[in-house]
Image (cartoon, rainbow, N blue to C red; front, side, top):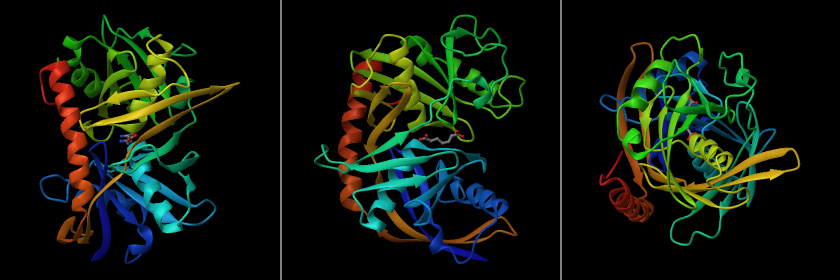
Amino acid sequence: MFTCTFKKVHGSKNDFILIDEKNMQRELSHEEKVKLALLLCDRKTGIGADGILFVTVGGRTDGTMSIYNSDGTVASMCGNGLRVAGRYILEQTGKEEVIVETLKADLYVKKYVEQADLPFYQVEISPILFDPASLPMNTEKAMIINEKLPYLSENLTFTALAVPNPHLISIVPKEILLGGEQERIASFVNKENQYFPDGVNVSFIYPIQKGEIFVHTFERGVGFTNACGTAMSASSLVAILNGLHDYETPLIVYNNGGFVKTIVHKQDDKQWIDLIGNGTYEFDGKVTVDLSRDLMIDFTKLQAYEDEVEQYRKIEEKAKQKRMEIFGRESI
Ligand SMILES: N[C@@H](CCC[C@H](N)C(=O)O)C(=O)O
């Protein structure tokens, strides 16, 4: 039997079970964490989430975050997750800004003060890598920027980059965004294939107007999600590379769960992205599982964060209206 307390959280409705490792009855091996992700993230038989964020406070940096996708695979980063994990580490340390260790990089997080009604958090997305080996992607080319990939589509062009988890991104017209192309392409590259041996997150960008884009993502290890933070960050850079936006300038990125703000920085030879958005706590809970029998035994809600859930509901409502105006649908 294994018991732990957790927080159910979300960033743009990309939802997670956040577990502070100090609240676990005992340390879990990687294999046990995989099982826990499969059990708890299941939306029918578990608690339901896009992934588990394992967090520790203190250590070499102010804290650490690791992410297990709902299918049990491990990713190197999670932008929406880092906003909530960063918030948690900020609150636990009482600091104004923190550095969080993730699998491949130490990343900067702070509270974003311009947002009055609901606290927003700003997280650093870096490094940004175009070398196909860093995704990994098998190709002869040195970089994939607005390239046709005939094995995926005859018409669309794609940009491939790692931030540092892998993203394949295409700018598309409305009818393509609303059609079945994204699911077909994403399903192909996330099954066994010769081009993306570890799979890849696939995003479609729809440019709304100057300063605004919509991003829809099929996440590796999850499927379509309401939003993917690293994908929205990578898509912001892709928008700039295509002349749709400028460096050092805020961009509003709408998604199926709300919106975020991004700023892509370029200074000398260094590039990084600020991802700014909500980091919402929904409720605290306690769960008991039997990992040897792959069973969730018991799950109790301990405390609900009704005020912030209600505040977020207003943001969500506005974003829904925006999607209705643009696409004539509440969600994509
Ligand atoms: N939702 C995340 C990304 C989670 C990892 C991703 N599915 C992967 O496997 O690379 C985000 O907000 O960035």
